[in-house]
Length: 387
Image (cartoon, rainbow, N blue to C red; front, side, top):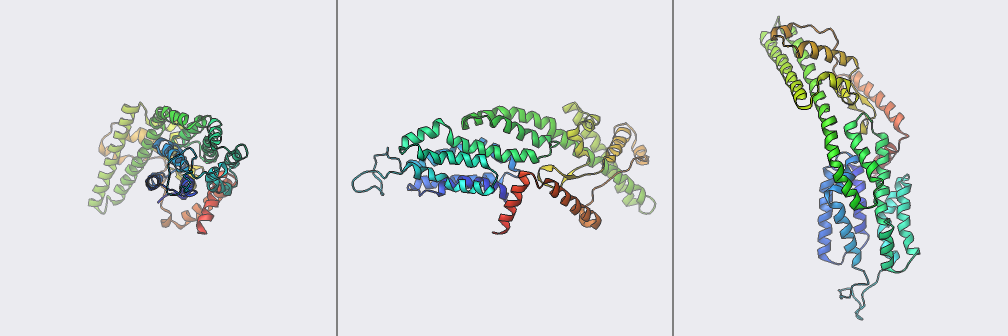
């Protein structure tokens, strides 16, 4: 299912086609095919911050520009070939500059509904104003090209979409936040689609570095936290069942030892492949958060539910004293842990946790309601509910 916020973004591109009648069946086929592929592409995007960069990389942007040009060239007075709609005199129907620019009226109206995208509104208005400067279609095309007026629709829209996202994103989400920040800082000074495409390719190496530096350690942190906790929980169940159910006790002992071995293997791979230890991870503020682990109350991770910081003490003790040392299985099963282990339970199992979640979510909503991203998201939700 396509995210409604993403749908709103790509439907603006559809409007350029919907504003004018298509005369050529082959061109209509190409437009329909582009729309289908655009919808399929949008369905693959779950994070609105990824939409524009991936749209630019997909080649759909270049196709859109070409198809819109072909659509409006149907009416160009430079074409001397007769069509079904050509008057008997043989003259080609002429579209005025103002009529040509009206293709942007529908997306402009949609932008105006947002209420806060003033720079994008101004970019559209600068295009409409070309009709006040010339009645000559060729001259209008030259103005649009030389002053990059069509490009400025994209660039200003990009800035006004991404600035609220960056403002609302938790900067500790470095793996998500940093690529978006790099895109924004680089693309906001671009003067053309070609330049943006170039920078997108140039940034791909930096994104791979970010992935290796932030995403992979984050995944390791989640695995380490999960398997360490499971090892201790299995060990506790082993002792609970030891005296009255030998079969269940043995199964839990096996589970505890399996999780210990798995965690040791994870730590070994982390060290051999990335030169990192558990202590390196717990010292990195961007990564250690995932040892808790955190669950977001809001999109973009600004407010989260997580285990208390005392969980770091538990993990450090178990990993450094029980998992890394080369002790026997019996020693591990007999080991007692001084620190307290914390677990996030599913809220349906604990009504008081559900009540707590609702309370914190309300606080999070209150503290973020001034942010443009959440204002706009709230407006879209209301709009969708009235459909």
